Amino acid sequence: MNPFIPKIFGCLMMFLFYLSLNAEIIYLDSRNGDDANPGSKEQPVKTFLKAAELVNHGTDEGGTTVIVAPGVYPLPERVLIENERPFTKADRLTIRAAILPGDADWKPGMMPVLISTQERGTPDITRDRGTSMYGLQVEVSHVTIQGLKFLGNAAPHNRYYPIRRNGKNLRDLEVTQCLFVGDRHALPIHVAIIAHGHELVVEHSVFYNCKNPVVFWNVDEGKSYGNAMRNCIVEGAYRTGVWVVATADDFDFSYNVFNNCEYFFVRNDINQETFHLKNSIVTNYKYYSGYGTAGGPKSETGPEISYREENIQKGVVVELETGDVQPAELSLMTPNNYLHPAANSAAAKLGAGLFKK
Picture 1 (cartoon, rainbow, N blue to C red):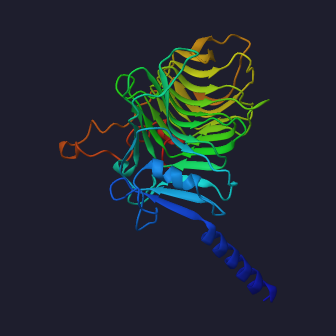
Picture 2 (cartoon, rainbow, N blue to C red):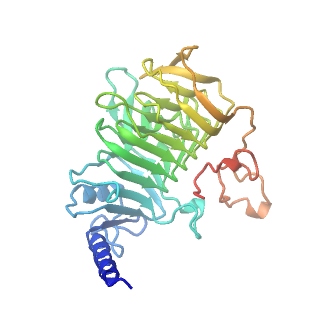
Picture 3 (cartoon, rainbow, N blue to C red):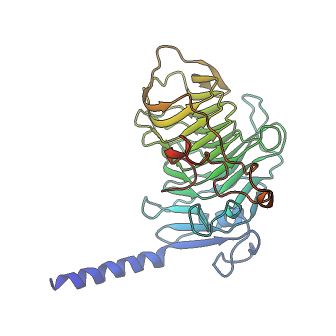
């Protein structure tokens, strides 16, 4: 044996141990937590506002993980996350459910539920369109949000955004295995995810009855690179399915299921990119492609806009599992494939939805 191998292995283990010492973990539990607690596993905090305060005031080197226990988490105001310490791709800020889709003991009812209870947001003076309300506003780079369920806001005359990133110079926001459920009459979601900057990656997430599921927004100058939407399910988007602004043509759109959208794909007037759409189902839309402004979609695109389509299925019937049809003794149980395509269907074969295979 090479005599240097044990020494190298020992140094590697010491390095990993050093990283573990510098990794910050905050525990969040709506049922058993208390905001007077330090946020340890034995003494978790209760609210997202307190967890964000701990993140914002953290000074430890390395990454930070917020582990969210099952429960219901009211958001009475915007949860702003901002910290100048340098997260990296490896040492990132992760906000994730304690039990993730695909774990052995996961059930839909185990997903932490975030519901906006804000009564009044920030007035939109320029367009006089009521108020804007935000759930998690993440103003740092290198962030993962995983395994959470977001509901809308019941206040009238509002536009609610569950996840927002406003910094045009920020990058690397990953939203994965999240569920967004809206109702245009009771708990509307105006835009589920809206993000300036680069590298917004949305994958393995489900958007049900959201007005606009995802808006890939603007950057300081030039084009926004490194964006992706893959393995997602969009059902009942009553304005747009996906909306791009300064998004470059490296946009990865693949293995998605889009059903019952008004507009499938919307862009601003100056974005003339030819996007590559791959291995997806796009069906039951009113308009395939459109132009939009800040006020919403305004018209269909003309022959000046084209897409490179590779295995895009447009005439497919998509049925999502709701749990309504099952034996009576199971009528109160939510199936694990809730809001996922029916088993063995064309949509199910794409691998879209919360479960990573």
